[in-house]
Amino acid sequence: MSQEALSIELADEIRRRIFDEPGFIKVTQVLRKRGNLFRVSLRPVTIKGEHKFQGEMTDAESGGRPVIKNFAEEEARDGLEEMLGQTGARELHLITSTGDLHVRVTKKGHELVSRSAKQNRVAETAHDRVKDLPLNRFDASVLLRAIGLADNEGKVLPSMRGKYDQVNAFLSALDPIIDTFSEKQLNLVDCGCGRAYLTLAVYVYLTQMRGFDVKVCGIDRRGDVLETARRIARDLDAAADVTFLEGEIDAVEPPFKPDLVLSLHACDTATDAAIARGSEWHSRHILCVPCCQHELHKSLKEGGPMRSLLRFGILRERLADLLTDQFRAQILRILGYRVNVMEFVSHDATARNILLKAEYTVKPGQSQAVSEYLELRDFWQVKPWLETRLAKRLAPFFARFGEA
Ligand SMILES: C[S@@+](CC[C@H](N)C(=O)[O-])C[C@H]1O[C@@H](n2cnc3c(N)ncnc32)[C@H](O)[C@@H]1O
Image 1 (cartoon, rainbow, N blue to C red):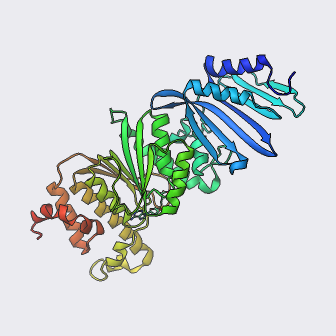
Image 2 (image 1 turned 180 degrees about the vertical axis):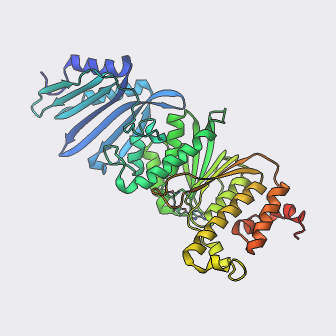
Image 3 (image 1 turned 90 degrees about the vertical axis):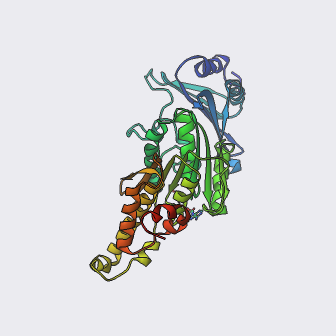
């Protein structure tokens, strides 16, 4: 047997099981180069409705970051030939729905082959089938590793479990909305995207799992985190569709008109900015999970019949949070959105677990929405930031209720 290549029969079997037989799940080869591990894998994926192959290359010499590339079959065949043509000690693991093939080539060129018993695995496996979560419905391990939520084996890092749960819960909230789009084309903006856990998860989920053609724009004021986000998007071969804008949510313009505006824990009034921009961009859907909220804490007036509610710091803080979200929901209603407010994830994942889910459905300025808002606002004698931000648009609706 040659030290250089796999036996002809074995190489033929691998080609056949990957390209010609049903049930191919993944092939991975690991070899040691100059003392460093070099790992390359190939798996089938569906992207924008097309059957493709996703290659993942991890080279310890270049920092061990996985680099992803999606290939048409012809290119994937070339990639496999390159993989099969590698030399030196290496291990190849082929997983198909009917069983595994494991080949170890020793330093001396001995080929050690083992096969698992026949089994009935489902193709395109998820690595964790325990719970039916969006990121368990397809092999999201490449994404999870790239965005830093999982380790090299694709296991969710204990320290990132909260973010993983939040992202899954956000995707679950998106699912029924996505079902209502007949066009398989979607534009999304993620306001206060940070290092883009949600931005990239939404992109990969909607393209690979839901078959949509998606463009996503993440906005954040921090250039350093966006640098990381852009690098991960490139690693995931998604940079053409996932772009990032550095700046204030209130000041930048995405490169398209969004169908959905998202924000997950955009701090303080950044959630209000996301709501304001979402409605100004005429986004049909706005989904916001607010974060810390400071403005009403300061302006709630002590004294009067509510003074006991405001006496204790923590209760005052929670009351201000609830009121802020209530005002946001009411203003969205005035702007013509039907609003749902829900707990989107368990308290264990984050204490900030309220989702405002809004869909543009009616003519703005409905009397009931306006009067409810004004009553609440006047009762608490406050002026929410969002009202000030949208003053020009709200003025004609408020004028009907005698407000100059
Ligand atoms: C708590 S992080 C959340 C990041 C991300 N959405 C996530 O869930 O991982 C909030 C992000 O919002 C950004 N941000 C806050 N206010 C902003 C504003 N007015 N304009 C742009 N970005 C803002 C911050 O820089 C930060 O990256």
